Amino acid sequence: MSKLSRRAALLALSALASLASAALAGAEPATPGPNAPGPNSWAAHGAAPLKSVETILIDASPEKVWAVVSDFAHYDWLPGVARIEADGGATPEKAKRRLIMGDGGVIEETLVRWDAERMTLAFHRDHDDVRRLPAINYMTHVTVKPAGEGKTLAEWKGRFYRGHPFNDPPPGLDDDTALAAVTALHRANLAALKARVEGR
Image (cartoon, rainbow, N blue to C red; front, top):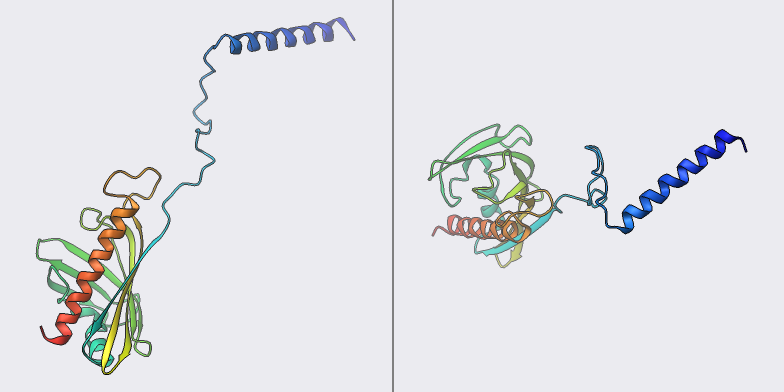
């Protein structure tokens, strides 16, 4: 080994010894650079999708219930809705509506499915407002099913995410809050549908 190589090896050993001594003495580790990975950088982040499915028995034929459910432009029977502005008829992706709420708020929605044969339709909210509903990316399906003896089972199903899409959601924007709020919304909507169809 040449004198130069021997000297480089000695310097490297000396540096390693110094680092080991500092570690044993409890020296603070070097501050990571701005592009260094964080302590949880390997963990998956983001909320999991949630689902709420509610049903109600309506004392009316499926055809009568579908006549109300299928009329996307006239859901003024929904709780809290003062009036509706709509266009596009029943054409998926073209049919849109603005629910003008009694408190002055506005909910905008787009029809994404309309199937008369299966008596089902689906629509999603175009904008998230976690102050009104602590959930985001909310999409819902409303389906009408025969229940025998001239009755109908109406199903209101929603898929969504909690209001805070990342890890460690603050109180009020967590999974439990989102699920409870959407479930309550579905139950209220179904109760309003039942009242509308049954004439109460």
